[in-house]
Image 1 (cartoon, rainbow, N blue to C red):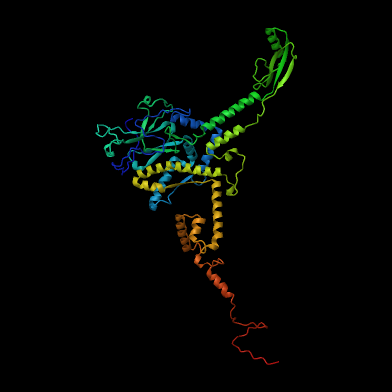
Image 2: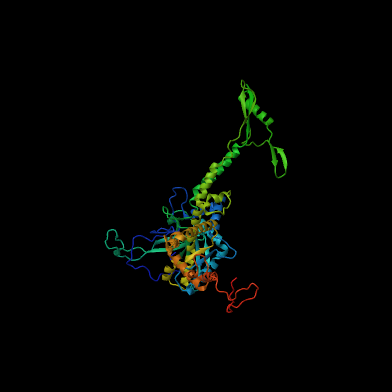
Length: 559
């Protein structure tokens, strides 16, 4: 365990040695900074939920087999990963990246190469589902150690149960004079030996992990692998009390157990209370107890007729050897009673009441972040106005968007390693560029599309209503910012595109358009000149012969 397997990409500009802090880095991976480490830590099981990460992932996978939970998971995965025959589920977006076209082309090519290694176009649904259920996903980036400049050769999936992320202090040799000095007492923090944190992964191919103390695990429980050689993407949910990374299924553990118990108890109640049973009161007179019991037994066997159907042979036979719990009651009655009597015991009432089951079902769906309207299957898909869209659908859309953004960290890590190994960029360049690299997933949420369309339509109607008042009460900038809700970037971008389209002749220049008629000014002037009349070149004659205007007509005489 002394040597690490894999490769490491060192930062060319580490932090200055004078940059110190007693607080370790904040990580969202659920791995706490620790003085000592082991393969699996042990946790206090106060709520009976889990003790180790191994048990936690195992519970998540068992939950995913339940029909209700599986339906919710499929709904989420289908919403996040949209499969199309022609388009890939995810594409890289470099519109906001300030880099040359050649660098952008290389980044796009390397991203396509990474996707091909994952076979993401075919296995996107499976990969995303594994990540969502387990709450984490591991990939080993296999490279040629003799030729690392060739980049990643293979991406190998690692079961989450076989991997563990460890963060611990590096051991230092020698006796430093500042080693035991307390920074709370000393005024100069530079006089204290700040611990260096070592991060690595431990891989164990065995699935039967020990769940006891860390000390019992030994030092050779797995293979130490460097942090840079593993792609590690979590759900972002962290149990801050136990320091474990959780899945989005964690909230539904209690709701699922409650639903299971209610359903099982309902089945047992219906089986035991549904049938009607009869009570036979047999008059035994003054017989002694032993003879009374024998007489009761004889009467019972005499009138009891139990027919049994044999499904294997198709025969019906009388089987009196077995007694079921749901059969009739035979009770003795002494002399002086009302004699032999037969009464009927009614079956259970209100067996069709499932209000409690519906309650726990809705509670389970809400804990899974899925709108209950989707799971019931009663309501149809509404393609009406956005005002008819439920608020749960909008929340669900935002939830899926957060999941996509979190899942994109996996592509970010793989792309970073590939670009650095091929010397396309430097680690410093990546720190600047990573903020502007986005991943565009195919979208199939009709509710969100209807909402955006409805909002745009309302804004355009409001802008058309305010058009006569532009220049009197409102400015053009006010209409664009407050009514159309355009940002500064959108305003600059649209103005640039409008100028380009006017120059190309795609759209006419607004300066050459008459605002009243919407026609070009040249056409308007031509129309106006044709309405003025003018001097005709030839005057018409009643006989149909044209007369030259230069010829003087004779003056008429007086009548």
